[in-house]
Amino acid sequence: AMKEVAGGDEEDTATAIALVTLCGTLAIVVLPALRQPLGLDPTAFGTWVGASVHDVGQTVATASRVPGALTTAIVVKLSRVVLLAPLVAGVALVRRRSAAVGAGRPTVLPLFVVGFLLTIGVASTGVVPAGVLAVAKVVQEVLLVAALVGLGTGIHLAMLRRTGARALALGLASWVLVATVAYAGVRVFGA
View (cartoon, rainbow, N blue to C red):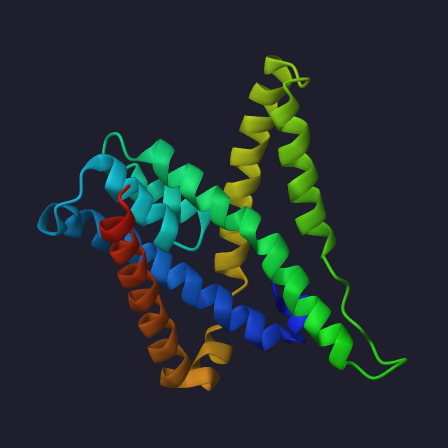
């Protein structure tokens, strides 16, 4: 989401996607195993998953392992996704201010963020017929699977070897930090 406004390159993006995919896959196994020892009921578990797993598909897969957690996980995760818009806009504005006049200045909001927000707005009005929403849900599921396959097949192992253990250590440490902070939030503020 930040590549365009943060000036990232293809290698940065590929590394980030690989690490998000790895950590999300680990979450599918690790987080449900920690639910009982951490004393989380299904709603609290769903909140924790939604707040700590980075990929929507992996959020669904993780929360689906605990009956009663999925709806909460999706609501929390999609709330995080919506918060990408102001985050991306804020970074873009800061970078635009610091960019030299005439230099390539990032757009304030990438088009996919605008499209996501418009889709939420239209779907929330209730004007879209249920049949259209049902078809859209099937299309969304197919596209999500295609996107995950595309992400997985687009990872170049040679590039990951070049970025080395430092990127892997940072990614795993970030994942543990996010999961810990999300768990603390669930405990402090409730589910």
